[in-house]
Amino acid sequence: MNKLSSILLSCAFSLSLSAEVYYVAPNGSNENQGTQEALFRSIVFSITQLKPGDTLNIYEGTYLMAPAPRTLRVLSAWASQPQN
Image (cartoon, rainbow, N blue to C red):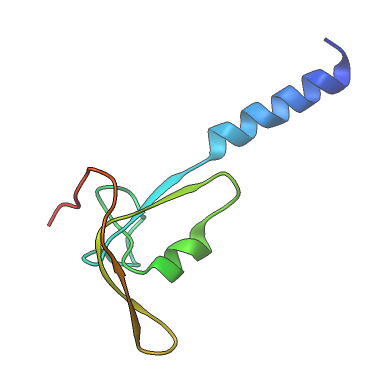
């Protein structure tokens, strides 16, 4: 393996290690860390926390969207449900 391939492989590996998974649900809080145990509340806020390679899982529910008072209803999501 040449030096450039080694550097690229090293960079790709380090990027994959730094990818985070965040969670958002209507009963969360933007003061939380966005983990499955401490959910974010706002989809818009959650998006601002993402870096390239991160994943945002959105739970089913109704979300208030700012700045105008609009709502977004997520009707289905993956199999897990948020803790109440």
